[in-house]
Image (cartoon, each protein chain N blue to C red):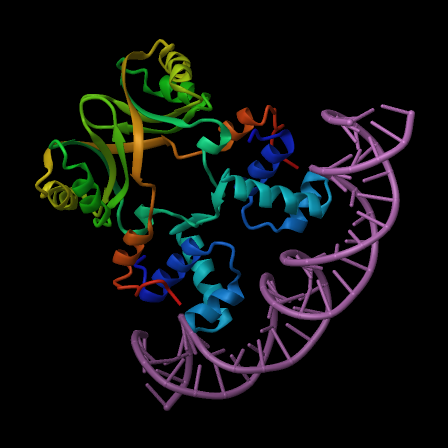
Length: 162
Length: 162
DNA sequence: TAATCACTGGGCAATCTGTCCAGCACAGTG
DNA sequence: CACTGTGCTGGACAGATTGCCCAGTGATTA
């Protein structure tokens, strides 16, 4: 499952310029088209690349407020709570975690006031004992994989690709 | 900036089958190719769609452990800490938050043992007073935008698109 | 040594992209 | 009510890209 240097460069390239095709990628990487094609197929069936879904910005959709809520769950209610949260559109992701809280979820809302509504919606469910929320003020490091890919591919993917 | 129904259907379609082209999308949506092209351009310059970066799975890269760390920062050290964390490849994202902790970051590691190393690396910096970490056990709801997009587009994007 | 594997370099038909254009419907304005 | 801007349609075109196939090569493995 290890990723080699070429894989790393390919992923980084795709991350930087997602819309380029196989041909262009092969030119940038200096390898044959078939190679790029094979690598991409492999990376996808490996599961290293899950897909190329559009990165949606909730803020641009009218949900500029992001928050993380730690939920404490009543014993044995986990499954129900999960199912409940899955139905709330403002819940962007949900994790079960170790430690004091039992679950951590990422929420978005239209405003701070609206966040109250979202939280009520989230918490207004029997299995949830308590929730503590932290509002995101800034996002100095947005979700990123490039450094990790570079590290994983042994590499030192020099500078700005090409 | 509001997203209309067609935009919603387009985004959902792209999310489900990211590799389809403009032509195919126009067929699926039952509109002219030019329309899809125009919508996509608009959505991207709007910032609603940030891009189409590959979704990398850290687990497949050899980093199966995910954790969230809440950091407490020494007064006035925020900028330095941000800069420090940005250099750590295992830090996938970083937020500054309200509440007790001052920052929340998502980490990955090769194993639970390796997580210790990562945390040491993260915390081993002067501005950080304390860190508390929660390891992710399950991820019942992986990061998703579709429900939000559907809600934002007024919609009721029926079932499985097409 | 034979076999396997990954990569190269090339070719081909089918498809898609980028770009234009004219026509049409609709909403807002004067 | 006529005018205008905007968004969508349907079509056209050349050029680029894709999916697919093949033969040759070098390296690694049985």
